[in-house]
Length: 150
Length: 150
Length: 150
Length: 150
Image (tube, rainbow over all chains, first blue to last red; front, side, top):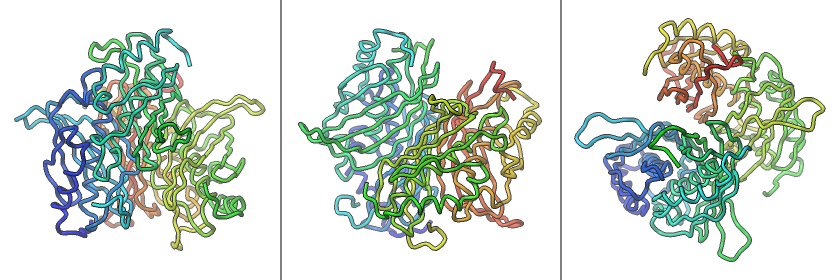
């Protein structure tokens, strides 16, 4: 995987802070590496469904962000990222208390990037964690569009 | 498609009001029919991503609810619904101002249900609407589990 | 949907005959329209799995061809089509005796096309048919590559 | 992952030989372990598409078999396996000359199994291989049905 921008970490963190959806869900960055982003979220009530589990779509929201930003780390400065499709498998009800969302680039193309994501839940302070969801996302590298940048 | 519960509409509306995630997103019910649910959402800032569009995962959240409740209308009273996987294609940036999410059952099985969803955006008062996303979801009919009910 | 090439039908039929996989499966063209292709296949033993049903991947092969060529009808002359991803739901065992595969373009973009497919089985001479599978495919319009043309 | 049948390897190899689709494609077994199956296929002309690459659906056919049999290794004797849905991403044109298809169980449930697959191509005698496709499949454990057994 070729790295176009040595300042990818700062660029990724700056863009992440501009996602109101992440503030709404209380999702933060655990780590940013080339081709890999890990997000963290404590379980909370407002994104749950009728059984008290994190809504499948909310798991997808955090995983999609992890995947999209994993792709973003490998893009040239000034490019924007757009997810064109993803598939998610929910393996177990997500109820926290801690949730981790990993995005890892599988194939970085010039415009089309394929990224795999995994969501885990754990108890605070425990080394054990349980896989609760997997995702595969296709993300576009978007250049030359003022409405999709950074 | 066989209907197990003539009171499906009230049962569906009652369950929907127990989804905090729908309150968080400002999503309401437009209509409930056997095998079909339509949800409505005015665009707002807190579920957006870094370009001001509705976050792909948030589109997925509302579409997954439309799909899950479409399946739920055909289930016996007392059963619960769980999405085990879905795939979404984002066809155009979702920026509203009005968003509609349609879930329509394609195959209702005894335990496995396949549901297709479509998301549209439109101007208030306009009859024209634009398709912004499509989903296929696989939803389980869950019976005999106290933590997944209604 | 904009049509770039008025000769799309002949171009599509010509390319289709160059797919050895379709000969191997005994799949032929039922109809070609702008944005829509229907393929036909009589059930046979060699693409089946261990229970005598058509192998899920073989259903996918015919459906992917229907989807890819549906996208191809709307492309400029000289362009090639490549599927970058698809998802299929198998709704019922496919055992024929007649199988139909419909591909219908949902969104035709400049380079990215989203196509939906449906597979049906029926008795010869019967008007009734049963939905056995659904697909959503993302297909690329490829230009300027000698190895992916027509 | 719990193993229900210590004779899983023989049971898996016996069932595999009953898939005419694998004979049609020239696919054989490389290895069978608990929760993991690897298949092998030399590139050949009859499953190709119009550009001489292995047809996306044929890649899917071999990968789906690897995934389905990976799930099958963990099932009780007498159970059958049915794929209810899968998603595949095609990362690079598959043209061999050697193709490997790996299926690895991610979650084995009582009836629902989630399996991930990867397809590689390589030169004979070379240790290097290239990832050409990834799949996630949902496979059912089917018991008590005479038409889906073993």
